[in-house]
Image 1 (tube, rainbow, N blue to C red):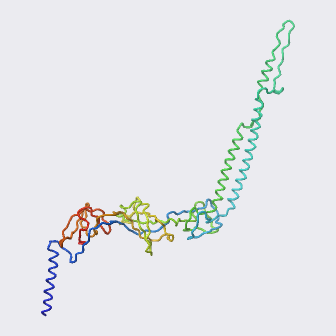
Image 2 (cartoon, one colour; image 1 turned 90 degrees about the vertical axis):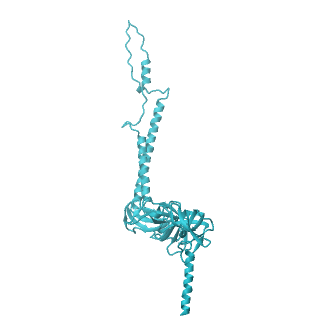
Length: 384
């Protein structure tokens, strides 16, 4: 019993001494003081959320005309190269339409050639007739009746000038288009132009019976099979550019305000410890509400897209919204009452602790930047 009582007395004295030592400055201290040294280093601030991997580009491919599906060369999940044939329609009707259009074009060109030949002959005839010194055929000269000369009254004989004037006034005979007077060459040229456009339209229609891949990527879906009837403009193949994948994520309103295009980020994929560098490329200007929280959509692109990404794969997204490379810093848990660019730390020196107001810069996830009130090497209580 004596030893037990003595032990209690000694223990009580030791505890009382520790408490007294901690409280001799009038500041409440934790039982175990852990200090940190103000040093220089990086201060960073990140925001994080969960996102989804999706292709940067998705194409909905359609046939250019309605028809019957004749062949399908791919299925969902297939990787294809640019220009690869994916599906085709029966080309019978489209090929016939193109043949008819080409026949009509050939006929229109023949009519144009004939019209130009006729016009050239008419022009040559008119030019030859109007040439100086050209003799007019007698049939074209009007007959002139000379007057009878009386014996007692001799008058000068009539001059031959009227006949000459009559001959010169006779117009050249030309053969143009006496039916309507219209320009047959112009009409034929217009017919050729219309026929050429008809051939181009028919050719595009024939080309549109085949769907080819406009980009390299992965087939996401095929909406039909051989024998199906399809309509113009109806999506038949969905193709995703899986070689340039991106991540879409939604951030809470409190974090989205610090996000902007160009910020660096890291992406960690589900069921993988690998981390990939990324960059914010778009922040939606309008948020969506689920009733309790407003979120903003953000798109991030990979700096080097992995080759084995899956569409719809989950990803942990972390965006760096602030960074100071070489700052005087202390652990963020050591800075209290931060407001208006200042905060309070508990400085430890010569077995004494005192509160001190310091100027605060970037408040990061692990460290807080101190811009005034502390020197490098000062010790602060890590958590109080």
